[in-house]
Image (cartoon, rainbow, N blue to C red; front, top):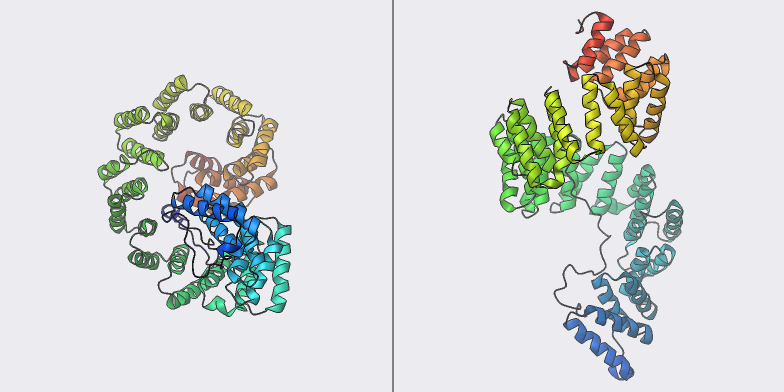
Length: 574
């Protein structure tokens, strides 16, 4: 996804995988018995010590001593096997999130109240939480036979983190029940979830098509939409979600899935309207408000985005992220001073370094080098835990602004305070490369590799430099091959894999790796290398096409321009 949408992270939860009675806050001590609570034995039929323990448990609950209440009720549930006591013990354990006693007491309750569907359901869900799926299915089948509300979806979802063998066994249990109940929507939905977990999206979709509930109930609708998206059939998911919204106009999950799908399909104006509707329906949900702001940014509706971002700041929600994105919006509106003011308000945390980097780039771009460095020095004093990253940011910013002497000075200053820091040494090695000091580069990179042998970035940097600048091709290839083993999909490493093979005269292999690199990251330097290999193989038309793409990415790239000059006689393609 594009840069402003990386934080659209509000989760969609499938209905049916609810907690069984867990309370959000302990406001009322032990939850009171309900009308459905199993009838306990008459007091006279309990032994005196049992009555005493139960009385102590109730008094302990009223005094917020839930540990005593739970212990006494669990002991008496085991001792008496009374379904009413067992249910009470289960409710307390579930309320407290104590899964082991909840499982024990749910089973006692279910055994002693075989006709109570709540008891059978409680045992089924607690067994599923414990990973005991075969036993869980037995209890859930009893609920199904009694025509109660089943939670086969919960069983399926709880198996998501298990191994293939466990899921295969659970799938067989679903198939066994489906032979008896072929049209049961919950069973069909649960099996579809299991098929999705195994990557069998097409089978899951076909199964849901057999399920009438999949056309009208929210959870199956959401699952169908997700499965279509996973099969690159997002356009088919759109009318499905729209039909669901017409049936359930107030459902947050459907509207959110619809909004996110519109973003995925790059229908940003519609996505904005959908997110605005969600914010209108749920005005206290600042995650939705932040998502709306991000969609506005992606749609380049800068001032509209600012409205929502300022609301977030006023509400004290997503404050740092709001300031960061306000800064970006002001940059897009060519208002650098306002952008700097917003970035300066981003505090320590996830967005801090990004804000510092943007401040530095604005100031360096405006020629305000002294001010940029002063701000970073002050930031290091205020937030010492960020000292090294801020030094790195300063050095890299200065290097990008072609102020190499100051960049070197910054790194040397940092290394005096943090000697042998591997990140600082890596930056120093890259600055040495810019100066042509290959000795310093190799010394720093070999130190990094000696202390971090699996540092793919250092291995690749040294290998590429040796391949590009020296005749030590066998050594270069060994380093690059190891980097590739560690990070096989990294475009920079794929570029090096191709380049060292080109230097060794292995043109077919070189083309293969460079094509992979260019497909993943079509920047100017990769284009220079890929185009040169194509040129050497006589594929000159394709080489020119690749170089044009590289020039579109960065017309001033020195490596690409020098390659063109050397091979075609001109730094530009006529």
